[in-house]
Amino acid sequence: MARLRLDEIALRTGGRIVQGDPAALFDIYNIDSRLSRPGEIFFAIVAKRNGHDFVPDALAKGARGAVISQEIGPTGLALVLVKDTVAALQALARSVLADKNPTVIGITGSIGKTTTKEFTAELLSARLKVLKSEGNFNNHLGLALSLLKLQKDDRAAVLEMGTSGPGEIRTLTRIAPPDIAIITNINPVHLEFFSSLEAIALAKKEILDGAKPGAAAVLNGDDPLVQKIGRGWTGRRITFGFSPASDVRASAVRKLGMDGMAFDLRLEGESRNVRAPFFYEEYIYNLLAAVGACHALALPFEAIVAGIPRLAPLSGRGSLVRLGRGILLIDDSYNSSPKALESALKGLAPLPARRRVAVLGDMLELGPEETEMHRRAGRQVTGNGWNVLLAVGPRARLIAEGAQSAGLPGARVTTFSTSEEAAAGIAALIEEGDLILVKGSRGMRMERVVQRLMDEFKEN
Image (cartoon, rainbow, N blue to C red; front, side):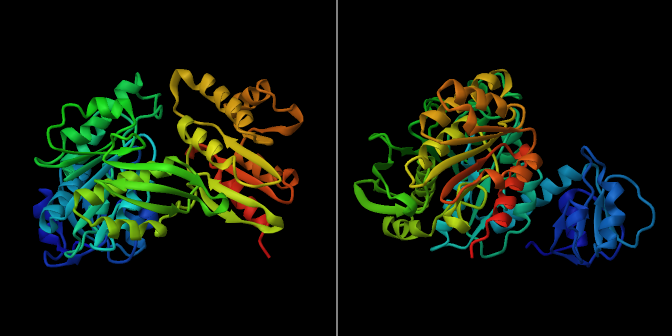
């Protein structure tokens, strides 16, 4: 963590001390009073809620200081007054990044950002001390908070850069311009906020526009839109994918049942057969992108290969949970989109099971095409041989319609209005030896279904 005096914080944020000892030291920075800890300095962010209203809560939990943009009553806290607390947080993060000067690896794309970030950080950690953004801290606040955790011996910062509208990634690159910019893919996500896939691609291109001079670009070689927005890139380019033209390439993919996958990994004339403990081919793309970043940093091929067995899906993103009665649960509850769901339904279909049960929630923010996208997902349920469908949410009823239109008997389809209702009723619908996929958009809270299954069918 960056350890700074109060007067340093004031200087770096363009603010002034209105209360407190200038020599007071801080190394915990926070914007959410629910997460406040003793000794922190609290940034009163003004957004949907006014963070100044929560300064007393932060104080009650032990905060010793606050950065504010509005006058507040006596608190006993050390106070720095700034014009804008968001801008102040970002300025502080930029200054800390300049102090530590690690290699910045920025990752964007429609799906797979967090997994690519985790894979990249894990592979690099064999040779370098690495900071990675926490969870999916990928917006203008989360990225800044991640940078404030930099330590002096961190040599790389692996940062997720997300967007739900034009200009957002540009803001992130102003805080942390990448030395290596990764674009995982362009897919129909957040279409409520974009007019087209091409508009999404242009928003992702902002990571290239905001990269440092001399930066390297790691680009999906199989995605036409990624390749299109990368055509003007004049710096070093590393492509990844299944195409023979890609610099980092996977070929001869073999499914190993519950042991995951094996494939040939090729890079600049070298090739190794590797095994990875995941079931979705989309995760191979995430791995290849991570390999591309490591290659850009001159990590030896053998060191990269040695780290691959340590990679695994994150909790809630395709992780395997073994339950009692021989039930296998694939917890993919964190989020969903048409492409990610297609990958899951296809990737899990070959796994051995008495029945395959798809528990699917609404896919959100798809814009005007959401009806057809949900019906198409239903047809994919049937086409990939899933035996039972439990549809959760009003849009998921369209998944049910699509599955039945493609031949899944109505007796094998159950609909629920909410994840709470699904959690309450799911245990009665599960049988010994089932393979269960739980997936839905974040707003559907499908983790409630996962938790109920884990509680109901605990492994003895």
